[in-house]
Image (cartoon, rainbow, N blue to C red; front, side):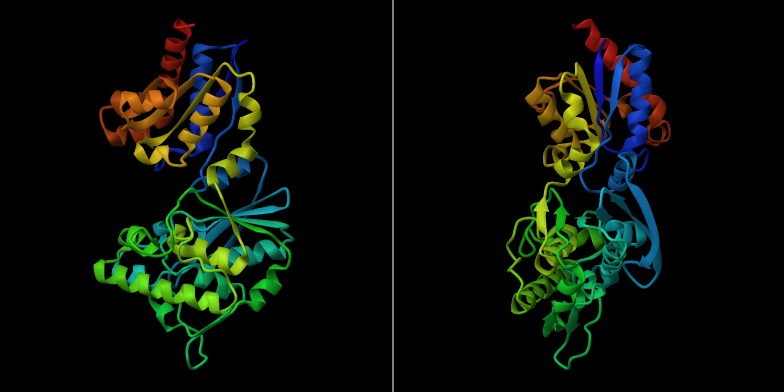
Length: 375
């Protein structure tokens, strides 16, 4: 009996990782009716992570929190085996706003702190914070304030929310946060290595995506530098040059400095919960994929992570994607023995997105049959 592991990420804007896995499984069954299939949808800590964790047995918790600006948003996180997995973007995601100068300067992470606070109230024994896709560039200041930190200006008044207000910070008191957190450990799940400051920092790299112009980027970088110094004066470690601290508009920096968080690979952390490592032992074939397979996929994204695991265990790898922008050499370097892009078999991009499930089933069947002919 042929053992097949199916371990894709989401197809953004089209299907969740769980839905992608189901569609590919149908295609595998079309080609191999008697196959033993291990369904292991994966994520890298970005959008779609919570659905993968829920599929792995977690419980989804839903609540209303303060969004990236003034409005309340319906957010959620997952509890699994005593750990709360909190996706920052569910509270302050870029999808809640239209990028603009105002957003770049005013968006904040207060709602992220509300999610963490709720998880602690429910007895979470560990917190894991994923940090991609935020609208904010506030260095995690809003998150810490929501957890009880005192962030005040020279007159002792609370500083306004948003990265644009960080230059006014005169004093930070993290005592209430540490008291609230107690001995609960915190991990930041990210595969981003950007520091908080500088040309590769949170403002410079991610600020323009949120509406920041060149002057705004400079102002935000200066404000984040001021914030980092204020955190050091509050007894926190210096996070200004720490790899990964710039993730999520610097919310990672706030978590490291204010919550004592460690930084872990988002993909590795989530993959460990999906059973994919166990499933690969003794497997005959593994299939992975994501919406767009490109150069970014090689840096900590799910397909690269699955490819590395497949390579270590000697399992042949097939890849399905909405589009593939890697050349044959790059695919061979990942150990890919067969690949297919949905866009190459659809009349348009819109069609590929709206018919992704049926296209995945069809292309999975073709890839598996092609692979069988080489055996």
